[in-house]
Amino acid sequence: DVALGVFDHFGRFGHADRCGGEYAARGNPAIDAAKALRDFRILASNHLAVADSFYLPLVLRRRIFFLAKAEYFTGTGIKGKLIKFFYSSTGQVPIDRTNADSAADALTAAAKILDQGKLLGMYPEGTRSPDGKLYKGKTGLARIALETGIPVIPVAMINTDVVNPPGSKMWHFARVEVKFGKPMDFRRFEGLAGNRFIERAVIDEVMYELMRLSGQEYVDLYAADVKDGKTPPPAIKAG
Image (tube, rainbow, N blue to C red; front, side):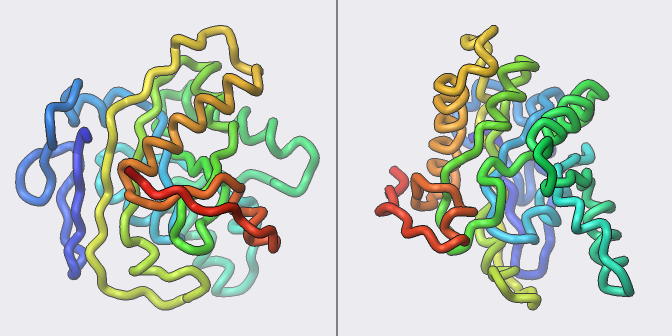
């Protein structure tokens, strides 16, 4: 793993691009952690809770830009304004997912972020996990990685669903870890963007690395389908 960030029970933390204190490079990484987080521009994270979008930006000096549902920005009243402020301040870019072109719009927005030299954060599961397991990844991230040739850094959020349990508005004290894996380079598939078999292979490779980093059980079904009532297949244990 490139780097490990730890938030203690009181929320204290250091920056992930700084070794020492609560953060350190582990093992024998192929690249320097600080260089990785400074130079690469696509982060792929598991998604346990709303708190993910709070903790992940805190550990990096660079601002991360995420793609988010446009509904988060259109609420009314005090609550709506607070929600809009939270998502805007954490680098969320609104995407209208209700129209037929939403997938293409998301890819266009992601490409624009990368073209500007910014750091793009993506949750390949497409939605928060309903039960703490890791679910099948959607191929949008693979398409972006293949079209741009930019390496992907896997990021594992651990215990954010304890701080902010699914379905709960309450936040609790807990130890949170943010793990950064080695950059994943998919340039061996250059010119194959749009090939659904290659894109599936790429995103499955990313999801496997997220499973390894996070220790989550993996379910080969989209999280959105589970939320819609589909019965998931047996989970695969990490390791």
